[in-house]
Length: 85
Image (cartoon, rainbow, N blue to C red; front, side):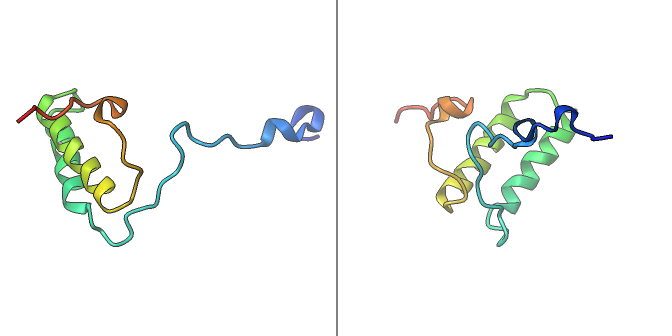
């Protein structure tokens, strides 16, 4: 008996993530920012706290600065824009 009813290969073809894939941080360039963000999430028990969003923004900025992800606008990443100077 087949695990895939009808033997349709289409049903087994993977779909890419909506925003695409991006390289892992093998050199640990953004490890500090990632740890700060994860520690914040642990402290607030996963709540959507403003201080954790700022840490997430710092982490994503590090990833964008080190070409670990494509640069994008903050609103597209669900984060607030920087205040105008």
